[in-house]
Image (tube, rainbow, N blue to C red; front, side):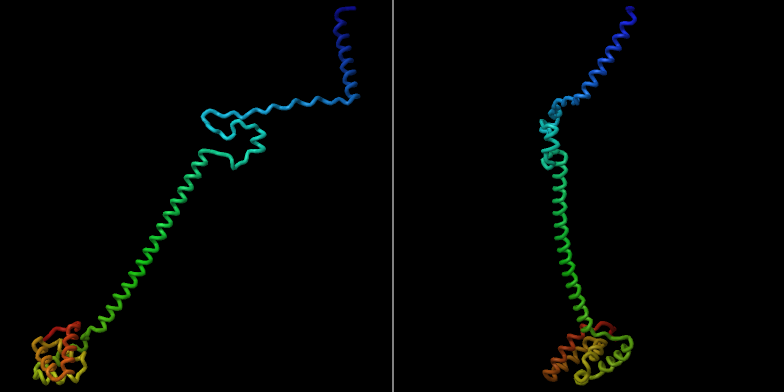
Length: 213
C-alpha cells in the first residue's frame, strides 16, 4: 500500500467511529454531568474602610439576610446628625420669634391703650378749655371795657347772674387788678358768691385766646 493512502484510510476510520459513538449515546439517552458547586468568594474589606459592614459576608448573605436598616455609612450618619441639629436650631429660633412676637403684640396693645387714654385726656381738656371765637371777640372786648368801668361790687352782682363761660371770657379781656377787685367783691357777698369767685378764678386759666385790652 502506498504511503499517501494511509492518512485517508485513518480519517475514514475516525469518522466512522465518531458516528458510531454518537449514535450509541443518542440511543442510550445521554445526560451531561452536573456542574460542580460554585465557590462563593468572601467579600474583602477594602483598605482605609475600617469596620465596613459588608466585610466578611458572602454574596448570599448580602442578598438574602442583610437588612437595609443595619447598613451604616459615616457620611449619611453625619448628614442625619447635621439635619437634626439644624432642625432643633430652627425650632429654637422659631420659639424665640414666637415669644418676641407675643411681647411685641403686648407692647402694641399697651401702647394703643396709652394712646387712647391720652386722646381721652386731650378731649377732656379741650372740653374744659374756654375758647373765644373770632365772631364774638369784638363783643366780648366791648363788654369787658364796660364792666371794667363799673364799681367792682356792682360788676360782681351782674356777674353772679350771667353764664359762667361768658363771665370768664369777659374777665379774660380785663386787667388783672380789675378782675381781682370784682372777685373780692363777689366773695364778700355770701357763701355762694365766694364759691362762684373760686370757680371763675379756676376757669380763667383755661381761656385759650384773646389779648387783654
